[in-house]
Each structure stands twice: as C-alpha cells, then as structure tokens.
Length: 118
Length: 109
Image (cartoon, rainbow over all chains, first blue to last red; front, side, top):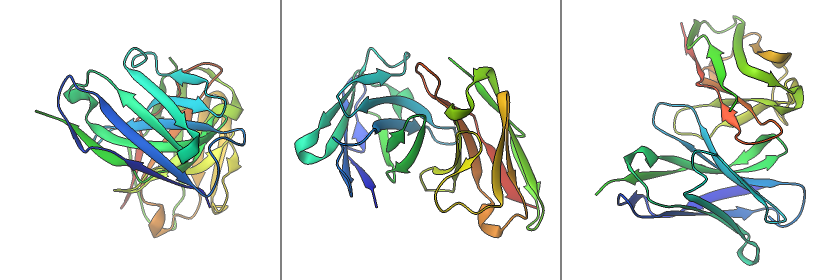
C-alpha cells in the first residue's frame, strides 16, 4: 500500500520561500509510470493543481505559478519536494502531495496547512 | 485553461435517495482525462471515478460516472450515510494545467 506524507514548516513569512517534502512509502518514486503531484486547497475552496514531476525528472507547472515553483525528486530518500518562492497571504492553503497515473491521482497525503503571515 | 463548473453547489437529500451531480467543462475534455473525487472534512480527496466512468479500487458500485465532451455526471444510487461529503471533478488534458471544479456539497436532508 502506497502512502504519502507531507512535512515542512506550518508558518512562512511573506516574501520568503515555502518548502515542503513528500515522503513516499510502499513503492519507489523512481519506478513505474507515475507522476508525483503537488496540489493545494485554500480553506472552503476546491483544490488547485500546482505541478507535477515524472519519474524521469521532467516537470509541468501551473502557468500562474510557474515563475515561482520548483518541484524536484530526491530518489535516494524516496521523496519529492516543493519550493514556492516569494509567497503572499494568497498562498495560505492546505498543501497535498499525490501520486498521479496519467490524468488522475490515486494516492494522496493527509495534507499540511501552511499559513503565510508575519 | 479548462474551467470546470459543477452543479448544483449544494444538494440536500435523504439516505436511500439517488443523487446526480453535474460537471461541465469550458472546452471538450477527453473521457480518459476526467475524474471524480469525494472529500470529507479534514481529509484528503479520495479517488472515486477515473476515465469518466471507471470505478477506482474499492469504490462501491452505487457510484457511477458517465458523460463525454463537455458534460459529465456522477450518479450515486441509494445514498448511504457515509456518502454525505463534497464531490469534485478534475480534468487533465494534453497540456497543463489540471483543473478541478468548485465542488458540490451533498448534505443530509
């Protein structure tokens, strides 16, 4: 059974960088035809896809976030990460990591709340 | 960017009744790129349907998906108490971004 777990600071100051890590267990992130996604959800709203990384390291990002986002694989630790630069209060959300098969996400982490505030 | 609009925003029904949830896309979406999720408070979304009509592993057969082009439907027959939640549709076409609908809240009447 694949499991994903997000970790990182719950509070980030405006203009700083939000950094999260997703640890995957029950399967290798470097094998299989999987995408590894970051998705966020502001309180009371629908999810918003941030981006994804494939097992070969290729990435796709949401156009509105592309200039501020980096997603990377860390295969030796079976982890992948999210860096979101120059954050504002609008980036306050629950952040999820999720495994993707083609167009859908079958396994999700439990989510972690990140608040942007001074 | 493909915008998904779900209707209704809220649906109030009783256990045992049937539910029909709609997801309309601003552009044509390939069937293989349309999924439905269920989300309960404090939990991550759970995959119900992928490829517009294929049930995910472990999903009861009272959940079914249909539709094509720009109009998709999630049908829940014989609502159980645990089915009352928020439901989202999602699409991922040939190019980013993937998008989600705004959600339909299914409430107990």
